[in-house]
Image 1 (cartoon, rainbow, N blue to C red):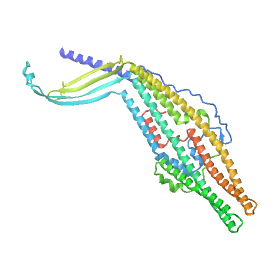
Image 2: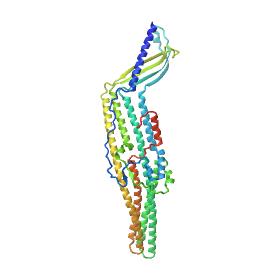
Image 3: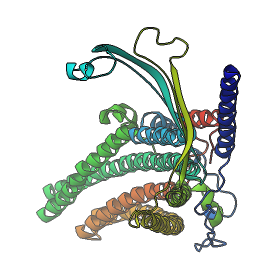
Image 4: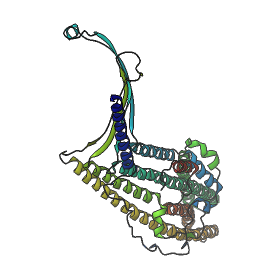
Amino acid sequence: MSAMGSGSGRSRTAGLIGTSVAALLVLQGCSVLKVGPDYEAPETVMPDAWHQKVSAGLVEGEADIKNWWTVFNDPVLTDLIEQATVGNKELQTAFGRIQEARAARGFATGEFYPDVDGSGSAERTRQSEGITRNTAAPQKRVDNLYDVGVDATWEIDVFGRISRSVESADAGLQSSIEDYRDVLVSLYAEVALNYMDVRSFQARIQFSKNNIATQAGTVRLTQDRLAAEIAPELDVRQAELNLSRTEAELPRLEQSKVQAINRLGVLLGQPPAMLHPILEVDAPIPRPKEQVAVGLPSELLRQRPDIRSAERQLASQTAQIGVATADLYPRFSLSGSFAFETAGRGIFSNGNHAWSFGPAFRWNIFDGGRVRNNILAQDAITKQLLSDYENTVLLALEDVENSMVAFEQEKIRRDALERSVIAAQESVRLVKELYIAGLTDFQNVLDMERSLAEQQDDLAESAGRVSQNLVALYRSLGGGWEPDPPQLQEEVQDQEENGEPIF
């Protein structure tokens, strides 16, 4: 009879445990209530068109910005872009931040599961004589105690604290991916800008060398005329002055060219001197296409990674309000332990096991307002990030507008300089003929040669700047990150295989 009673008690206990576990599993599977605000993407009003009017150089239509550097049709530039994707150190750092954010998300997701700890001990104890002598029954003074078992605690996400934490971590991971893409956009632009610098300095150096040769010829002309006593010594000295001033500009241009090459080496993750054998060979400044499609302002929201990142940061912070709000409510958990205990041998023998099991809750009833003030703080941070997002959009619009007008106006300036160089070259030829014929003084020769050198230098600089302004325009449109490079594609694929959300 007693045996039947004992079996019935164990059956009721097992039933109670099974029912409790089943109920808590249901609660854990779906939160009863996710406190805090649900995130909604901010509505952003974008202009219907760009203020910079579409002209011969800027045309309507979908902007082809994925591999924008190919519009320059320069194999060296394309190769540099590819090398930068693999070797740039800042890009590798940004990828490391993605992995860090992914691990943080895994940490947050881990709170959905129970905490299980194993423990064990072996202890030999000795009691004092005064204790054992005064007991009713004789006891051993020396004994062995053994204990091995597991303890488990499982928080049930009733009010969505864990769910909101995971939601925040999801958005944080997505933001880190957008930050990586933003580094890509800036990296490709920096590589192209410095490459344009190299080619622009090479063109300016070549013009300078040509002018040095021309002005050296003028010095010899004045020396011959001085020897023939048909020109004063002043003409010789002024010609030498003009030549020396032009020669003095050459080292400065050479220095700037070398520095631009060194900068490219660092951008590619290489020692600065590695690219000199390739880039020291002169090549023309890459000339962009005459027409560029710029798309619509509304496309910036999906094209620019910095805007996408700011929106994801806002989403992540919004979820933190829910995490803080959940602290106003009780936390429910399920805890239990199972162990084998004995003071002798045969610890795993039948009858040496002990267990405990039961639900629990903890509720912070009074905390001096810390929880509510934390909620207010998280809400204030969220409002700050909303303002940051809106400001990021405005700055992006400004960036595009400025890049468009810079590209258009520099093209106009370059075309005017091309005409001025042709006029200056012809002027130098004509004024020298007049000087030799004695129909004009030498000052006109000096002025024309000096003007030619200035116009040619301005033309080379402007031609490089036109290409650089187009690079800046593509960067402002958010071009270059799509499609993602192989390294990031593998990371995104791993997330998809693991069932993680992809933005």
